[in-house]
Image 1 (cartoon, rainbow, N blue to C red):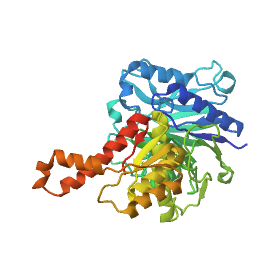
Image 2: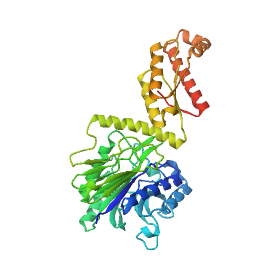
Image 3: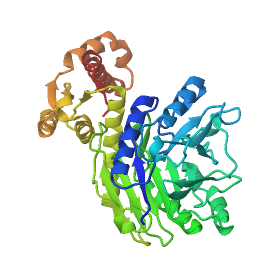
Length: 436
């Protein structure tokens, strides 16, 4: 009988425990409807990643943990959550809790279990996890969860084996699980609950991580990755699974949904989008089936398209999670402002974007025409607000400063005046100003 696992590619919002729980329950229901026996969510999916100094609030940790334990799901779910001090040592630890309904959990007493804790805590680049967590010293294993025996790792735990971590950790969780296998501990697969931030061609690095782990473990290695933006970080999704022979299946980027994984038959894997999601989605919704020689993107055009999607998705998610519905920007008629306008229109819809041309006496009619044409082509609102009077008035006020000074000072006044106008519209009309 096929063993099916659902990887939940979720767009969590930091701090929105109730909203994140609802998303996890909906995605878990999709996994169950498509035959999955167990669902695997992302790192800290209940509280959202990265929660940063929210983790210094004991009530936040406790509420996150209790929310994870009370998820209303029909199949067992592995879900990332901070673990309160009362449950693990004296400090919060980044771990995994299993939760579900009575009829779906193998445990007869309907209890939830802490089945793994993160072993490798990154403290470089955008990460500062040693500030909040204490590391575990052994690998997690979950027996007979949804008829599957699983090894469990959390994000960074998988990267040491592939040689892609800049830190010198004292242990390698993948190697530890591989050693257990050599000692006769048989597992169907190992999963990784991840919140791996995006950069160009990051999926290529994750493919290497998963292939390295699958080869070392000699069974499938599955990675569920967060999708969407939280503050300054972007997560592209691209959840994936690798087999020991090098075959890889990759979920779409920039979309919420479930990757249904058949451990025995890679060709049976499929992507089910979260059709009721209020999150932004963009790009191709087809999964990629890669042979052992392919490393992800096939050409530079795919990378450029992915970067474009990333910029749009980042702006869209920032606006949605901040309650921002409308955008304003300056339109000069140049390439920079045209690109910014395209991104804004794609992120929140052209009907919610205002472009303002603010010519001075130095502006050409050609640039004004180009600005107007850009707005018309995109279907966005357009206003023409010349700055000549403001510029002349300010020059008269600070004329003594400008007379013998660097001429660039007068030129820069124009950009500052334009910024004042854009910000005035933003404040008065509850819009977000974006730079061009």
